[in-house]
Image (cartoon, rainbow, N blue to C red; front, side, top):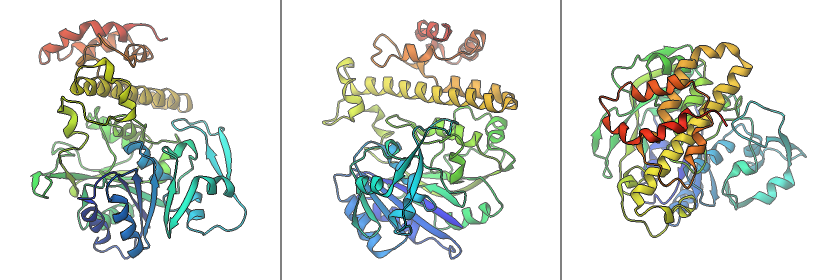
Length: 419
């Protein structure tokens, strides 16, 4: 069985060795065709040097160095380079004859007619070989160049480069996936910067129903998981992404919320396990921990730079941008549901779940829209939910969230007709 561990890297020289060692020192994986794809997202420290050092010692490691553009683009690049893709086979020099790669032009669509053909010359212009199994590209977003069908014979497990795997993670995944699963979901524990346990089992709660499900969407619906996220909490068949050309949305926070819902909605047989197989490192400087910072850093991500003039503090800017990101994710989930129904009318049976999930993603009730440089107001008009559904969601727990009254003026933007 092929399992690709996909690791995005950005300025993690302090933790990267621990992360890589946790993958290379897995127990009982002799039957696994292990593939480790590292994507350096423009690190400015020694992270790339460390990655190359490991690649020279272990031929299972493949590295791409690219321009900085954020976590989503690094994960998406890793997907295009998993074993079983034609791009990876060419870069591994397993294809020598003339050939072309069928690539799509757009992600997030069931439409498979938007095809372009990429030749060897096209690929050679984009990827520069630095060393054995080490490549560089000037692209910041690989999906601007290529969006491939991924292999049905490969399973993917993401791992962030400051986290690490339990020593039996891959063998456990292997044992479960042999039952012809589309997806295996496991638990996660939190540790501090010195690997001391902070909290056990932070991802899957004890009140969930564990075990097998005929459909991934049944798991979400049966357990009322309307606010759900998934990236590194399990392994899934890479080809699940093919039908909708699913990738992570770039340049947003919490990019794994819409990804999770669409992925699980595309999954058939899954298994949900309470076992902890990954350790999430809670550290200063991470995206989550910096949410409360009030002062602006010396360097802002380019997608936040234009917003700086509109907000007096970094905290207010990030709160607004977080709401924008959730609204954007909601639109992607909404569009998926609308397209899916057109192809499969029986999918309407999940309408209640999708309605609640989409409304949970909308964060308009948590911010003031006096300043709205990204025009969240206009984004929200794109939804065609019935007005009474929106009102019910807003009012159903008002007694527990009285602050919602403060933002009731924002409600009118959800109640307008579709643009």
